[in-house]
Image 1 (cartoon, rainbow, N blue to C red):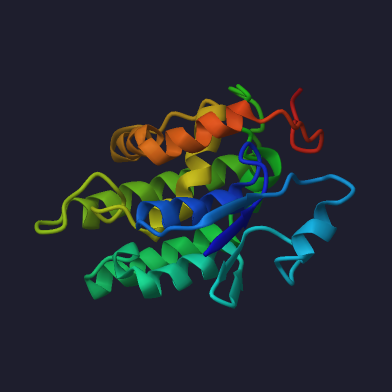
Image 2 (cartoon, helix red, strand yellow; image 1 turned 90 degrees about the vertical axis):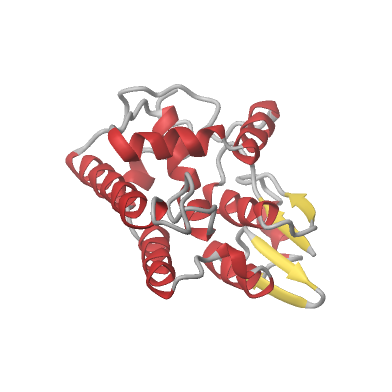
Length: 218
């Protein structure tokens, strides 16, 4: 199994399947291709038909797109989704919402782990996105994360693909100094303390590439 990813400091899409794969115990070769270079697209196209990262290659099967990769992994490692059907349905729903939405946040607060942009990037649209994310976190924690028989510190108790999908937002909140209160704040702290999140952040800090288009605030 091979996972093709971009720069760890910037590539939020790459973080999601990497985290899901590592969390479920999948063994894979990591192929990192720096983004925004003259040869980036050519190098990615050798692996991915979309010309974008991430891309998973497994015994001749090629899967691209972060959510599709998580779903592919979940077929091999069912623990990536909650076992309860109602919880699983909500987990898939919030994951899809994260995957396709929150455009204001993406545009104005791109993932940039090495920076401290506290107070930067706020617009009415961004603040509405933040409020919705905090509401999702609080709701999932209260309804499912603390449920008897499935209790745990993540959105649905045990770590799931939904947590992987929201992982880049956790790094964004840290970079831009966003501090949720209550259950959402506790969840954010739990995610940032996850050993795999810390491993990814350390690797991002060790990278030397800089992408001007992503370093929005200097």
